Image (cartoon, rainbow, N blue to C red):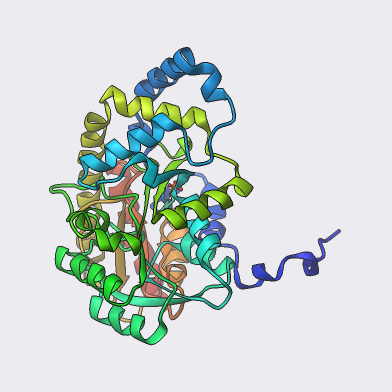
Length: 403
Ligand SMILES: Cc1ncc(COP(=O)(O)O)c(C=O)c1O
């Protein structure tokens, strides 16, 4: 039996199964050390706090949180997200956001509401793979803007906007996935100027902004728009509790101009009707309990140490075969092999040595840089990181011997 592929919608023709998912099939090998995933460390979830919050909401609002709910989101959760955003300098009222089932759903709703087949969209090269695939599913032509360790090259971005008049620009300005890069304050201001000058929508995807190491990153594009209200017609912001509280709660949010938010809400009705009231209520109660700060300081400290160990390990053990910029936050080290080495071939050798990372090519919408790779430092402990990098050094020897 084989399913007749003619039956699939034509929109699927442009989208392939993610290379990362294919790679993940290999990760079941016993003894493998994986830097390939994009998950936060479950050992750092505040299970006790979330459990207390769950007990509270079921006791105090059992019927309401187990019932169907409003598509826009559960009232107390919207209020809690508004307070959370205000504390970060983004003046967002509860009425100006909707709660989504992870920020992934916010991105999907943006694809649904904004993209017509053939529309051009500018993203960073490299960018979050699921976004490339999601926007392609709606028929977008995706254009990659060059980036460096300070995020997107704003001059190149301006030229691309002039040339392509995109439907929107999608950016992960803070601790990008996969790049780990953070857009400088100066470049952020320039992006906002470009949005106004060219009347171009800019989507700011910000799931990692709270995961900083030594010092907080520059304010988000949304925060920077606080005293420039005219910008709000062009600015869309996606947020999420996935990387700071728990991805399993599936609570994210979308902040957008009112007309767009209304259309996104309509589309969400056909998609999942609403995000789980129960998990929204748990997240809201958790924030009220005031435990997030302590939990986040721990996460920041642990990730900072792991990132440092990973970067120094790569530098000492792989030497001039690899280049990278040390990330200042987030979950990823983005690195580049030197002297024409290919990260796909290196990844295959690494799997033989029982260590995994993701070759960088799938993170490019087009013209991939095949020497790049993404390593996550979030889930491995320090000795696993050291051991994993020693295995990478062995893999490199094996790879170089065959070149
Ligand atoms: C840049 C970026 N955006 C969005 C998401 C989606 O996260 P969630 O749907 O869990 O909020 C992720 C998850 O890895 C991500 O890296």
